[in-house]
Length: 436
Image 1 (cartoon, rainbow, N blue to C red):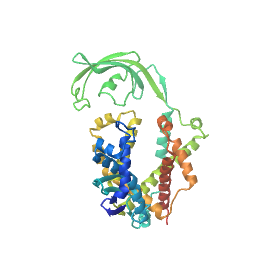
Image 2: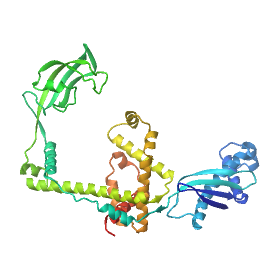
Image 3: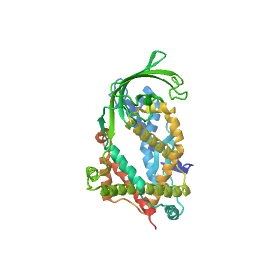
Image 4: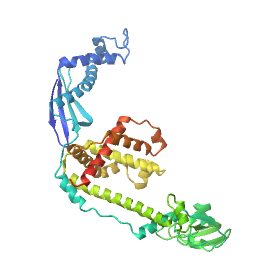
C-alpha cells in the first residue's frame, strides 16, 4: 500500500492511497461473498455461490463497488497508523471528524485508488501568554459589600417569608386580589375576555391602563361596571383604540404581611441566633458571589487576550460541532421552561439554520478558547489527578438536573474525558491567575 499526505487550509489534510491489486483482490472476493449472503441465487446456499456466478447475477461493477467500500474501511486506519509512525501525523494533533472519501480509480484487475479529506486537530502557536495574563490580572478589582446591598438582600428574605391574610376592607395597591370579570366590545363578548377568580396584585400594571385603578377601593363581593379605551399602542393591535365595557366582581382581598427584622426572624433562617449574625452571613454570601463574578470576568479577559494573539487555523468541523452544541444547550434551556423548540423558533421568527449561521463567529471563538487552554495545559504539564477526576465525576452525576438524565445510560469513558477537560481547564485558569 502506498500513500501520500498533502496539507490544506483550515487544518485539513488530503491523503492519497494506492492499494495494489494484490492487496485489493482479497477484498473483491470478500465483497462477492457478502453480496451472495444478501441475495437468493438458485442452486446455492447464501454465501456459497462462486465468484463468477455472483458476477453474472449482479454485475462485476457492483462487486467492485462493494469491494472498494470494504477495502477503504479496512485500510484507512492502517494508513493513519503508518502516517503516525512516519511522523506526518501527531498523537497530539489527530484526525477529527468524519473523513470525506472519494474513490478515484476502480477497475477490474487494477489497483484501488482513493483520496481522503479530513480535518486534524490544529496546531496552536501562542505568544507570551504569561505576560498577557499578567496584564489582564492587573485590572482585577477588589470587591466590597455595601449597606444597600445587604438591605436589599434582607428585603428579599422578608419578601420570601411573606404571608397572605384575607381582609375585609377596600382593596388597595399591593394587595393580592381575585376578580371575576367579563369584557365586551360594542356589546359582544371578546375572545378570552372572561375569567373567574383571576388572581393578580394591584399596582403591578399588567392589565389595560385603568383596569387596576377601577378595582382599587372595591370590597369583597362588590360588583362594578366601567368602560376603558385601549391605548393606540397596545400590544394586541386588534384592540388598540377600542372602547371596552367591563363588569367585574371582587371575590377576594388579601394583605401581604412581612415579618419584622428581628432576632426571631434571623433564627428562622437557620444556623444563626441574631439579626447581626444573619447580616454577616448575608454580607459573606454577597461578597463570595461578587468575587466569583469578578474572577470569571478576569478569566474571560485573560483567555480572550491570549486567544486573540494565538495563531490557530480552526477547521470547519470543530466550529460546526461547537455551534451544534450551542443549539443543544439552547434547546435544553427552552425545554426546561416548558416551551417547545419549534414554538420558540416561530416566536423569534428564525430557522435553526439561521441561528447556527449567526452563531458561527461565537462558535469559532469558543473553539479557539478551548484549544488555547488545551495547549497551555500541555506546555505547562497541567493534568488532573485521579482523585480530582473521581471527585468531579461524582459532582457531575449528582448535578444531573432531570429524571431523564439520571435514568439514561452514562458512558463512563465519556464522563471521564469530559471531567478531565473541565478540571484541566480550571487548573490552567488557576495557573494563569497566579504570578509565574
